[in-house]
Figure 1 (cartoon, rainbow, N blue to C red):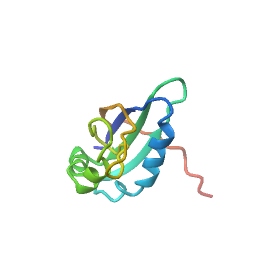
Figure 2 (figure 1 turned 120 degrees about the horizontal axis):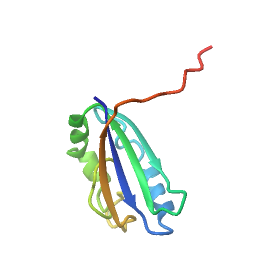
Figure 3 (figure 1 turned 30 degrees about the vertical axis):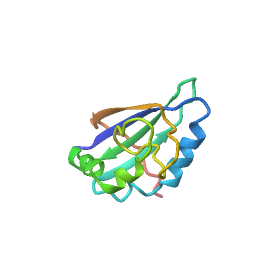
Figure 4 (figure 1 turned 135 degrees about the vertical axis):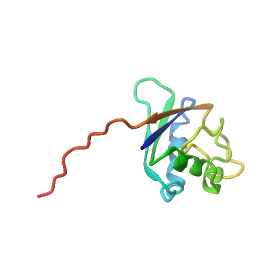
Length: 120
């Protein structure tokens, strides 16, 4: 069963662009992990200070495999706050943290509706 992990990352005012830049720089770090199904980075739009990092995994075991991987450890070095699952705002050694904390939310996918394909 697909599991969804949402990492809610608290980001101080003005630090959002740096967080987004760091995510863009680490592109590819999670995509080749066994059992990985998808990723989204959501920016707050209505006065919030939390970014949401959503990842989809074919199973809890696949997610745990990512969490225990060298790629995860490398990507979360100096992330600023605990590595609470899924990709976060890690950066190279010596980079200042962008976030002030993170909270991991976990779900099982019950239903997903995609738009009809535009085959034709």
